[in-house]
Length: 173
Image (tube, rainbow, N blue to C red; front, side):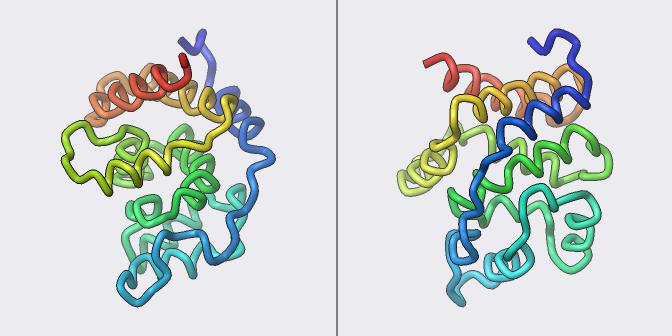
């Protein structure tokens, strides 16, 4: 478990684990830069050139004024997802109430779908969740454990548990 870690210590663990994450490049923020996905294009433009440490609550709230911030991680490429995830992890630790649906969708992106027959989607999710270093994966576990302990009555607790089960299994290999 988290041995009573507080939000500041969990945030430090995330910051240290992702300190050397490399920007994916402007063309690799989202999975589709074509006109077929205007929402993905909007996310790409908004995040372009933005370092993950610069993605704070005001940044997410400004995006939410013109679009749905809860979709940001949904449209990100595997590289973009892995790069920007620490920003969203830090926001979840510090601003549960203010994030609303962004909190819920971030958790859902960490819990692979249990019941899908869409093999293309299964492969995409697997690719998105692969590629984290062991230290980064352990930081994700620590965040999920912290959230589980900090918000035991949260409506998203079942999803947190499912994500935690996945990441505990993934890090035990």
